Amino acid sequence: MFNLFYKCKRYWNTIKYLKLSQLCWRLYYLFYKPRIQENNWPLLSNSTNLAIAPLERKRCYLGDGKFLFLSRVLSIQETGWNNDRYPKLWMYHMNYFDFLMQDLSDSETSDVYNLLSDWVQKNEVGKGVPWEPYPISLRIVNMIKWILLGNRVSEEIERSLVIQVRYLRKKIEWHIEGNHLLANAKALIFAGIVFEGTEAEDWEDVGSNILLKELGKQVLNDGAHFELSPMYQSIILEDVLDIVNLYSSFNQRLEDTSHLKSIASKMVEWLSYLSHPDGQISHFNDSSMDAAVGLTDLQNYANSLGVKCPKHLHAQSDLSSSGFVASRLGASSLLIDGGEIGASYQPGHAHADTSSFELCVFGQRVFVNTGVSTYEANSIRLRERGTASHNTVEINNENSSEVWASFRVGRRAKIIDKIVNFYPEKSEISLSHTGYLHLNGSPIHNRSFVHSIDYLKIVDRITGSFTTARGNLHIHPDVKKIALDKDTVNLRLDKNKSLRINFIGCTLKLNDYWFCSDFGNRREGKCIEYLIKDVEAKILIKW
View 1 (cartoon, rainbow, N blue to C red):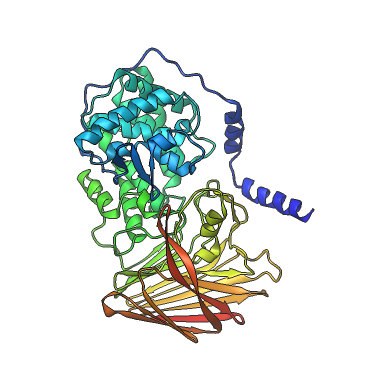
View 2: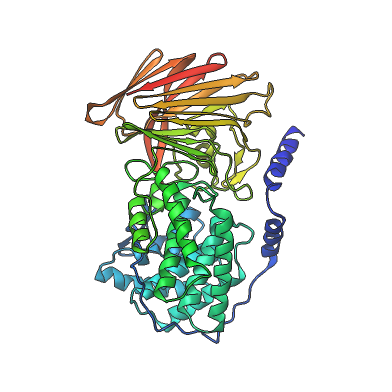
């Protein structure tokens, strides 16, 4: 009976944040099977150039029918295009057609034509992963970019492209919203611009209306995409830049193209703050380095399209809309997640990481969140989303927000009493959250940071009663020399640099953990676990 009550409560805490329209569309799509017209084919426009070359993708087609996705090489002969024996995310990537945007040799280009024909011949409309709206959206855009780069396609492939657009037009992801809806909009815009006729005009009209409306909701005042994932920030920023590029190339405009450029400029700035000195993204929420274009390439692409990119970031910034705080002082760079679960009605990429942080010193990553290696519904996915996989405190072995399944969140931590003060050579940040208020004793975790030129001080306080309070500091695997001596941990960094970490009010031990810079790529690292003895633990990190 208790388990039934718990499950009902969890479902309620998950569903209550959804829009009624999402629930209605989800129910509708359970039964709706669109009929797709297969005649009256619109023609491609005679204009076949982009003003600026789109960004290349990382190499994923290796030749001879072999593909590299999620750090795993498989052959099309093994997997086909739709195979539930392999991870769904791997099959998604297979059906994105990102290989069209990589630098291909002549022989690989010949292979690509055969792969396109093979896909058309072997995928019945509406069946399986290849026909889910998200991979359809990415595939449409990649195919159109391929054509706009001067590649000719057969009538069979061109008509398949039209069928895919028609199918997407009837299966827009109103039930999911978030980044999926933006991907749908982008695909409809691309198709609507490069094809001619009234049907294509409808595609462009629907896509541009979704785009403008959703960007207004999904991009916050500080430039963050509301799902608060640096990885998806990169993906959506590229989407916006691609659309600016497309309209510029075809001498057509949205209602206000300059507005799109302004949004892109803000998004670049936020992404710059949430990236480390190595130019790669931080690992807050669902973020993987291999799934998005790097910051420098995005900045260069934006500049080429006339989008203003900040040349110099403030050393200290309170990104208040998204909740993050960035402090770059001296040789160190600190990022703090002081926000709540992003996108309340679409939290699928959120983690239970409230008050977590990442720290770089001397340009090297020292403390990191563990990242994500999978989207599969398994124990690894749950662990990687859980509080213990982040640099914060877990009380009574509970997550601060109730992450479950692959993309669900029930009960959610709320931020209270957040204070941010900046001084010329010091940042002071304090915040409390309610993630454990439901437990016996109603504990509240308060965390304060004092970040200066040569140190970081962290104080964890627990008010209310609790059984256990355990903090974790995950050390990046590139830090090779780690020494624990009672209440002190010494780290040896590159170039003979070092850090000394002193703990007061807690007991320490070193644990192993898995760090995931990319999907499917797990590296062993060390984690400092500190058990808070009473109600307060102090940590002083000096370099």
